[in-house]
Image (tube, rainbow, N blue to C red; front, side):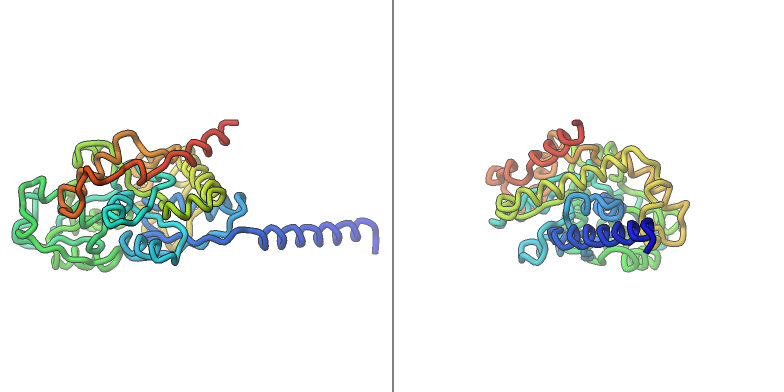
Length: 339
């Protein structure tokens, strides 16, 4: 064999061994999201597609469930190591004696919009029109459920005056709103833009931006985050550290790239059939993502206030917010990135 050919063969063998060894040693973890294709959860997909988890020596499997409440259930059952859902689940779980904490915050807004169907007689104009109507949510106990109830209560509509309908995400919600089987419902992007573009809905309350969320809920907010059981974090600090570093890196990618750059990395089925509409929704959503993964000041207090207003089981003075999140890993990730 000629020297160059022998060198290339040896190099190829070495690369193959290196790849196999790296893959074999990667720590396997499973994360679950409340709908992997939702824009609010994109940092997780980006960390995977861009190889950031792999760079941290992690082999991460990302599962998808219809709603965040299902994610929390699987996390508590020990079926997954991390849940990607709304921060409010950590407070709700603590009120039931279950210790879960957010280790990195992805979104600083709710990332949701309450939309009214235009396919019903006398479409709703404000949340005060919810009396006698059906309101769609992802599921009972989901963040959309608690926030819908809060918005109705804030509009002085009693919980007994309307009906909540669990629909899951995506097509089920779209069909219900387009057919007028619900008067309104809370949904995230890109589904919200899809319905608005079709003329099937109009916005009642817009919480897709930081400003819109503050206006609707009265303070800073934390939406999507990565949370895990506190006992798992305590015994897997290195794995947690690496997960957070990968996600903070994905957040930095989002803040420094255009919507078109981000879409180029995503699976094609995320964009669906209308790429221009998706690009528009994503571009509008990018400013609401965290840049450093830290819990926004005052956000835990706002989330607790909202939950306590509609859930009698949550007594604010019995909730230890300091145990529902930690900035330790995000701070470490930022320090590493700044070196």
